[in-house]
Length: 403
Image (cartoon, rainbow, N blue to C red; front, top):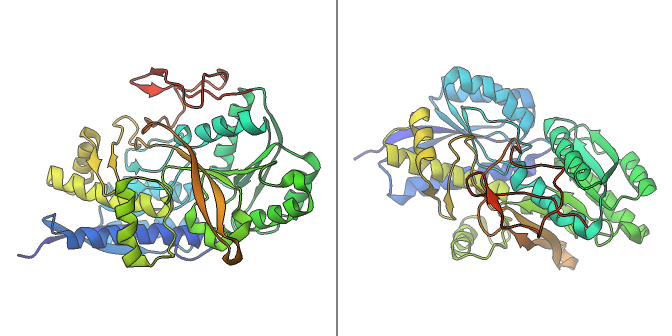
C-alpha cells in the first residue's frame, strides 16, 4: 500500500555569510524526514521541498511563497534569522501555512502562524546573565549584528544590567557578514569591560572571536578567565571553524552535544553512522530535527496535516521526539525548554578541536515567557542561580543574582 505524501518545506541558507548554521539546520530537518519515512511508524511520508535563500533576507519570502503555492506545502521548517522570519510571516498569513521557527531568538513575538521551538529570552539570555554577573561583574560591552536579533537581545541585556546596578560601557553593531572589526577591538581594549556579550552572527562573529583571541594573548586582562565572551547563539556547528578562538567562550543553549542522557547517547550513536564521527551536532541541528518529529507526531495524533489541526494537537498535550518530550505552550506557541550553560574547552589543541562542557542547567524545562511578563528586572536579588520559588502556573521566578 502506497503512503500518502505530505510536502514539507525546508528553508535554510546553505550558502552565504551564516551558512555554517544554515547547513546544520538543513541537515537536522533532512535526517529527521529520512528517519520518519524509513521508520514504518506512520501512515504517511514526508516529501522534502528544499529552499536556499543564500543568506538574503528578502529571498526567504520568495522561497516560502513557492513552497506554499507551487509545491503544496502547509508546513515550513526553518528561516535562520529574525529578519528572515519577519519576511516570511506575511506569506504564512496569506497561505495559512505554519512556520516552525527553530533558532534561539529575541522574543517579543507570538504569531498564530508560527511554532517556536528555539529558546526565548527567559530560556536564554536571562539564565546566562544570572550565571555570569555574580562571578565576573556588572560592566558589560554589547555587540550585535545590525538587525532585530542584535538590537532586541542587547536591549534585554541593558534591562538586566540596570536591574542589578550594572553598566553598559559600549554597544556597537556591524552589518551581517562584515569582518571589519578592528575598531571594536580597540574600543573594548580601551574600556576594559568585565565581560562581552556577543550577538554577532556568522563571519562577523568568527572574525571578532579570532581578534579577541589575539588580544587575549597580548593582554592577559582579556583572557577568557578574566573577560569572558558570552553568546546565546554560538554552537558546536561553528567550533570547527573557530579552532582555538572559541576557547573559554560561555554560551547558553537548550542542547549541547555533551548532554549526558541515555536518549542523547543513542541519538549521537545513530548520527555517527549517518554523518561520521567528527560531525558536530548542535542545537542548530537538533531543533529542526525535533520540529520535524513533533510535526509527524502531531499529524499522527490528530489524523490531519492541516495547520490549525496540527497546532491544536501540539497545544493539547506534549509529544515525544527521539531526544525528549516537548510541550508547546498554548498561549504563546513556544516550547517549554531546559536552559543549559556551557564553556568551550579544547580537547585537542594541536588539531584545534574543542567541545562545550556544561557548567549549569535548570532542574527541568522552563515555561516560555517570550515577553518577559513574569520577570521584573528591578528585582535583582535572589537566593541562588535558579530559585525554587514558583508562580504563574509553576514557572520559576527568574531573578538576576547580583553580588
